[in-house]
Amino acid sequence: MNATKNKKNMTGPVPFHGVTGKIYGFLASLKFTILLFSLIATGSVFGTAIRQRVSLEEYLSAYSEHTVRLIKFFGLDDVYHSTWFYSLLVLFLINLILCTVQRLSRFMKIMRSELVLPDEKSLSAMELSFVIETERSRDMEQWIDKSYRRVMSSAKEMVYEKGILSRYGVFTIHLSIVFILLGGFADTMLGYKGYMVLTKGEAKDRIVTRGENTVERTFNFTLKCKNFKVAFYPGGEPKDYVSTVEVIENGKIVMEKDVRVNDPLNYKGIRVYQSSYGRAPSFLFNISGENVILKERETFSKDQLFLMVVRFESQIHGLGPGVLIGYLDKGEPKTAWFFKNAGRMQERNLNGVDIRLENIAEEFYTGLEVSKDPGVWIVWTGFVLMLFGLYVNFFTYYRQIFMRRRATDIIVAGFAPKGKEAFREEFARLKAMADGSES
Image (cartoon, rainbow, N blue to C red; front, side):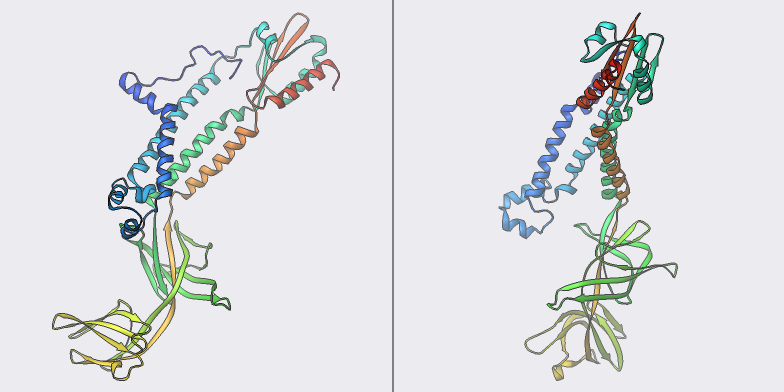
């Protein structure tokens, strides 16, 4: 409430009329805000109560087939990425913007309006008011001039105010929420997360994104694992693991960083996190006198021979570690096991080519999570704005002091929409100063 503004014709703007105006009014209404909050809260309850993004088998083990159909139909298995949940957030964003614009328009209209000092009767009737003789008001007026900003002054009327910033607190909070939502949308629409596995010395320029609809994303640079180290506690638990990652662009190393958990590599808006590690076996074959090193899923092709490492088992029927090889025999797919420690089963003749498994080695690989979050700085900006808005809204106070001169005395009154107790104490000190009991 601003007691000194002319409030005639201070109703909110009506940019539309007819049906459009009614739709606009509903979208900008508090009623619509409550409805949206209720729906978003309900969706969040489903998103918490129902396990998200797990396999169909897990849903069938927990619910009936009919319930699983309903979960899938309404997208309750992935609430926070569902179209209806995004739609609710978009509508909430629209509602918040329209409410803010409407409220800000009214506020700016009041701020631009002509100041009207209440009449003597109204001033005297205010909770905080007193009368002082004109000849004794000098010290009090000097204190007010020093502590407050004079916003209206004439021969008989004066209006002072301070803490005007607090009146913008609620708009700052609204703006911060808009930033946070926009940042979230930017991450959802433009960002991605994927996973990359690298062994020491290996380099890749692409990842496969996570989620149901995985896609391959290619960078305009290459990530190379220069080194990977893992340390263990005496009990065998991992103590620390770190990947030394090089960023290579146009054939040159442009960055090198030790990537640890919670200490990612940042390059061109892409973050590379240390996610996991494991052991990757490699197999040394002698194929017609040629040494060939293959890993799982890698292929070898020469003349009429085509083979692929299908699977590795550390123990097969007491024969020790074995490697399952898939190959083509006259166009027909076949498989054959090679055992490192099983004598004659260490070598075979496939399509007239002698193949011998010479050795199996295991080396560590590093699992890196790669993400792009273009909205993260928008979200951070929103959080900073929210903290600032909360501080302004709850720890700064708008206050006004009115003075009306009469023939021999002055009516002094005060108004504060918030922090009334603190202002009451300040006004009491002001009155004591006027009475001469406090200097």
